[in-house]
Image 1 (spheres, rainbow, N blue to C red):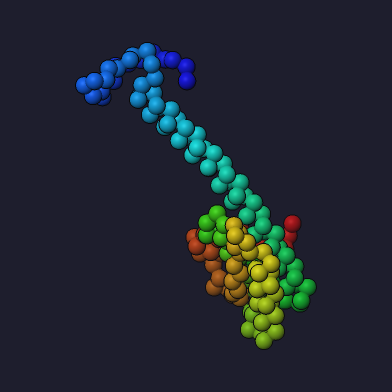
Image 2 (image 1 turned 180 degrees about the vertical axis):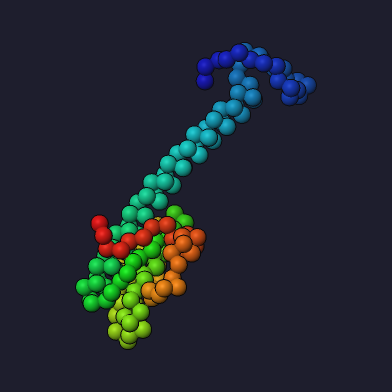
Length: 156
């Protein structure tokens, strides 16, 4: 640390100690600590943003994969809405056609989502799939207010 202009400290040393005004003081140490702490926060923030971006990409990819898989099985999927619970935990709400949703064959769609979840989940990534049916009463603004911030309906 380069010497800087020193100011007198208001903390008095013990009786057998004297302040050296041309040396690094406790104030300098505290200032350096606080600057390092801020730099650490910046580094942590960058790492958190990168982790979130990576996991968001995974959540989108896996949701699209489920969408295509369900379409291939003959189900009508209106949309998928994505929500981040935190940096590593995501929720996808699949909005299916009502007739598909209430059919017994829809259990295959749920099984497909479970398989994909088991393949995708890791120590630092979790994706949960939830299902509902499309209805006129489904209000996307309510989904927005619940934290679902992305919507996918098969269009790239």
